[in-house]
Amino acid sequence: MVKFQSPTGMRDLLEEDFKHFQKIERVCQEIARFYGFKRIETPILEESALFEKGTGFSTEIVKKQMFNLETKGGDHLVLRPEGTPSIVRAYLEKGMESLPKPVKLWHFGPFFRHERPQAGRYRQFYQAGLESLGSDSWIIDSQIIQIFYNILKSLGFKNLIVEINSIGDSQHRAYYKKNLVSYLKDYRNSLCSDCKRRLRENPLRILDCKQEKCQKIIRDGTPQIIDYLCRKCNNHFKNVLETLEELEISYKLNPYLVRGLDYYTRTVFEIFEETEPTFLPTKATSDVAKAGARDTESEEEKNQEPLALAGGGRYDDLVKLLGGKETPACGGALGVDRIVNLIKKRTKKTRKIIKHRIFLAQIGKFPKMKALKLMEKFRKSEIKIAEALDKDSLSSQLKLADKLKAEYVLILGQKETLEEKIILRNMKTGKQKIIAIKKIVGEVKKKTK
Ligand code: HAM
Image (cartoon, rainbow, N blue to C red; front, side):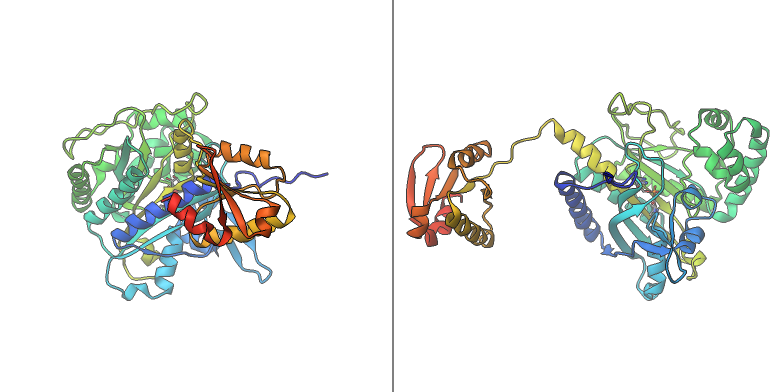
């Protein structure tokens, strides 16, 4: 017999995961709404060309990670690998260009990337994203970072660090790229095979290659993009950093952070949880801090790359690239699964038995039916009640009520059911009394106030 399994890198989410997902969604909603972001949900499937053009042909996401499909009608669709091009598509399609700027949108949902599955990296994963379209002000970049930082703080993360860089605007970046390629050409044969390709197609991505041999070349004196910023980009970046200091957000300049999506301009950022104490920089012009290795949580994960909890940046050219007017924009997304994993790890040690104050027991066929009917009355009165309707023995039901730490047990026997009555038993004192069924909800309400 064939045993079916969920597809590689995709998981079933059970109740113990869901409560965390729902909490994260609730926190994101509260904070996003406070800052004036409106909810948007785009389809799970989009045209492949949207990401080929938007995310970029030469990115790993488009080259290697998209789940492509062809419909019976011959349309080329993909399971969305990220949210930004979809939101820009909706912004243009739904005529949001005519709305007062910035147009602020937020979303929550599943995304799909054919990645090598490993801890914190799934083929189906959830993101909560924020996009602000229509302003080129540095204050928006700072606000987006602040919102993600605050969402994570509200979820109990303490030692957060924002890694940040500016990759300049597309116009001036070309000059940097030329210099980068001319420097790296001499080391071509020592680069990994991916970086050899990147040297032709997307040289900036070499900067954040994780292969040791490439890292060594990069850290041994590659020109740094920050030294090539034009005056406007430089001022923009300086203002963002100064705002982060004002907001007391811990950050670290990472000159090698370029991010894996082609649309970014100027500010790019990622947020991590640090296990060591973080520092608060004192001035925006502080020395560039090298992106050092972090101490990850468990032995098994020690060799793994630190995983970003959120990432994003400015994308001033994307709306125009996808057919709209020139519209500067900025946004980011939170990796919900990674956050859930960390929250679960943290709460595992302190897991408590959930107390059920009321337990409903029954003995026999008709009491079972009556109990099912009574449950509905408790539901309507918003009183939580535990049961084991499939069980027949009273002693096994009482054992379970004890395990659940129930304060009261309601018992429906044959006699009580015939007389339209029910036994109310105080589990602490062992005392019990008989009450008319029609009065039991009110009685329980009084006792559990
Ligand atoms: P991203 O960095 O590709 O950016 O993804 C954002 C976050 O999603 C990551 O920081 C990570 O926490 C989570 N994530 C990404 N891939 C996976 C995976 N395979 N498994 C689990 N979690 C994952 C974007 O997607 C951009 N659209 C963000 C953005 C919005 N930039 C501007 N606006």
